Length: 199
Image (cartoon, rainbow, N blue to C red):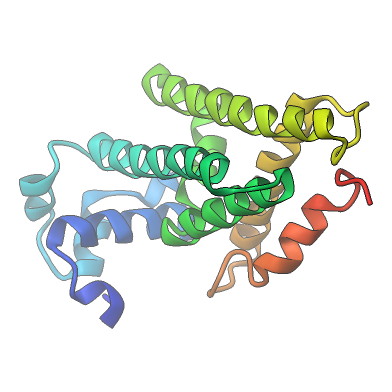
C-alpha cells in the first residue's frame, strides 16, 4: 500500500506519513500500530522501534506542522514587501504544509478538541494562539498603511484565515476524495482576500 513517493523514505518517515494519512482518511480510532504496520508491510512491533508510543507519533505530526507553520509566518513577514505579499506567502506556505501532512493536524484539532487529553489540547491551543497573533500583526500593519479595512478586528481576520483552511480540510475529509486538499491555491487565496483587501 506504500506509494512510490513514500517508498524512498526512512521507516520512521513512512510511519509519520502513513499515520497522518490514516488520521485523515480513517479517523483517530483507526490510528493504530496494527493499521500503520499493515499498510507498510511491517510488524506492529517495528513501529515501536521508531516511536515509544502512538501518542509520540501524533506529537511528531503536530510538532512538524506547528514548527513549519510558525516558521512560514516568520519568513512571510521577513520576505514580503507589502502586507498583501506577506499574507500570500503565509497562506501559500500554510497550504504547502497542509498538503504535506495531508491535513492531519486540522483533523486532530477537531478530534482532540473533544478529548480529555490536555497535553495535545494545550499544544494545539498554543499553536492557534501564536499563529493568530502573527497573522493579526500583519493585518494591523495593513490597517495602518491603508491596505486592509480599518474596521475589521485583526484577530477575527486571523481566525477567518485559520478557519478557511480548517473548512477546506473538513470538506476534503467528508468528500472522501483523493488528491490535493486545496486544488487551486491561487483561487483559494483570492477568495480569502476578497473582502479584506481595499481596492
